[in-house]
Image 1 (cartoon, rainbow, N blue to C red):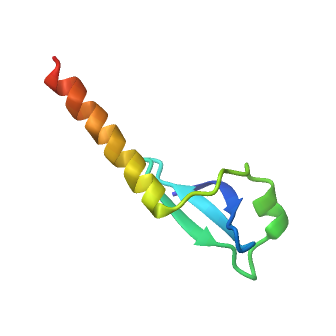
Image 2 (cartoon, helix red, strand yellow; image 1 turned 135 degrees about the horizontal axis):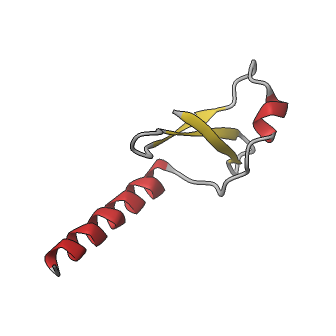
Length: 72
């Protein structure tokens, strides 16, 4: 998993986003006290997201693939 960016939650908490290089699965990790915050801020800022958002996005992708397969 590689860090691809960060976002800030409404409560002010910063979150790192890591993405799997093989399947594009994403995980969110809160910034820890011993993390290099300047290094985090050098990553791209991403729109806030939740695990639910990503699940819905994956379901939509599967639905689109399913529909494309049915029309062939």
